[in-house]
Image (cartoon, rainbow, N blue to C red; front, side, top):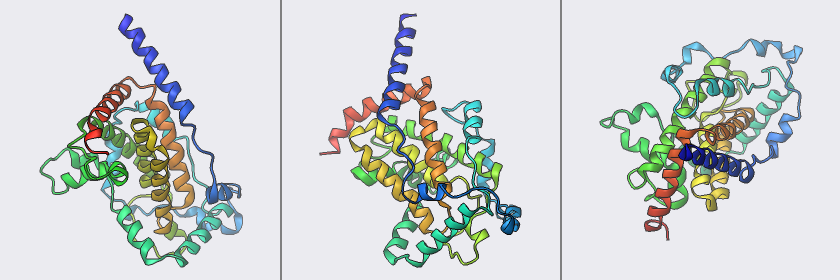
Length: 297
């Protein structure tokens, strides 16, 4: 009984600390400006509201609808997935978002293209991690640690930090479940389905809302920031770069990306009330404190 009381106390302290130290930054920049424009349907563009993501373009990601979350409960996943919505296709807000993306497209540089395409190829997939003989198994684990290695070097990896790897794997399973639950429930068309002048750097075989890249970028940034708090600003800055890269590529509306940032924060709030997450989190922190001095000088 005494151990149970102690665990509950530590859990409350952990959650309170997260809420106090990591309040979600207010919406800013073009995300704030665009949100101030009407998201309601516009009769003059009513045809746009008939467009959904084409079923013929669905990819294998739809199988994640069959996957259970790792740390989140089914009810939490359902509540979170229903907590966001996108502006009407015909709305003035979406028109401004598309105009903004056309402007980004007109200013794309070769350096930007190289960087955003590099970021675009990063992504951890829980299914690949189940098969050690998979040709992309090692790359998959490398992608799992992208934010850590990007900021602190290639020695920050799954082999050297197995406890942290376990934590990130659980978080990323929840992320994929959340991502595709929302995408296939709402079926938002990609920006290039609504605006023919957009020339995306690639096309994606899943619906637009919400952004998976932005969701993992912020969810991992928030998680890493709890393990390595002195790097919080750098992790958030990297997540910001990742979400903006999706707009430069012409594949995500700004509203896709802001919704993902909001969801990531809500997921973290759930995590710090979760016994299994807190156990794995504390083990990851202890491992980091013991092992990281060998690799970070």
